[in-house]
Image (cartoon, rainbow, N blue to C red; front, side, top):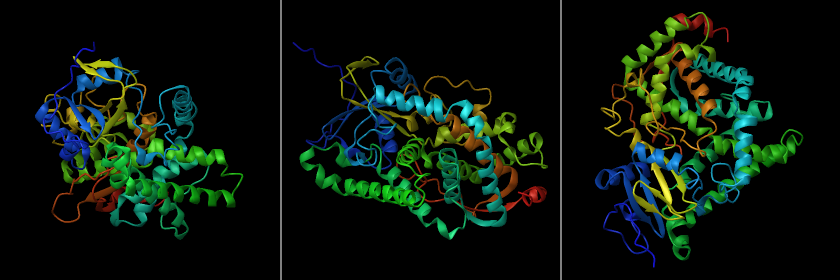
Length: 450
């Protein structure tokens, strides 16, 4: 005789077929955060036919991703993304097993190891210099996201193919802009945000058909663009290269680092006193006679605090989706095999028990703070954590430090920058950031020589 399962608390108003989906709004992480506030840090829901466990406390998240790391090592298989993940074989969505472990090994050892990151330091430096040069020549009202996306894309392309792909203000970049739109659409449509993914197959088409058709169309456009490049340069754009490019860009993500920098600049524009404090640190530790480089980052602890506070408030991985490979326990509750576990990083990062005045941008909170366990996990923790953490930290630090060192930044108008969050896998801003920038007078000579 089967014993009765001990399940976590659950909202009482579950509907037939739809379960608790009617309680959700976008962005999903915010909606789930509100439900967790009402019902507790471990919450059992039904998204259509699927059992869902929402985890919203640091201690429970650590238990999920350390103690139960192997039991929860699988990823959900959302029908809408089957086409763009090569039937769930890309690194972020592959099932746990030998194939995934080999992809992970290559990503962490062959591409993103400390040795390889050090080897490509000049690549990152050159791309950040190119961004500074562009802003110097085009100062005034600027929109940052396009340039930041181009920078992260060029770094990946130089590492993979040995050449740049994106050039500012180049009319030849039509394919690049199309590819950029593709990446943005994929991050918008991916993740645990499509209602139809959770409905029975018999009615999924009505709710999900449009999204799935869009994803198939996106996948076809992306492959077509890359195959057209292969026709022109067959030795450079081999089949192996195309697969590596697609998987690397979609797995490691061009949007993730650029989104974090955009959020950081938004926060600094709304808090000019913090921006000034960061500039003073760079002035004192780096000076005005050369552009900041990666070796300077260790001398800039306040800049590191700003980045950590941005990770806390706007983690690009707001929800970490896992699937139970076997029956297990979380806390005192039973979790059945096949249950989808959503760790709400956004909610944990704004927990007032862990973070006093959690909605305030206060980088000083990270000075002399020992971050433990699941308190701060912008890259996840455990065996399925992001392998690109090292690269992302170097990129974000170098770009953000250079923007602060070289330019004065002002909001457009008197109102604060709108911090509304958009929907999507990598938590984009709802609206792209625009600001006024002009070179610091004391940096003009240095900038004019790059």
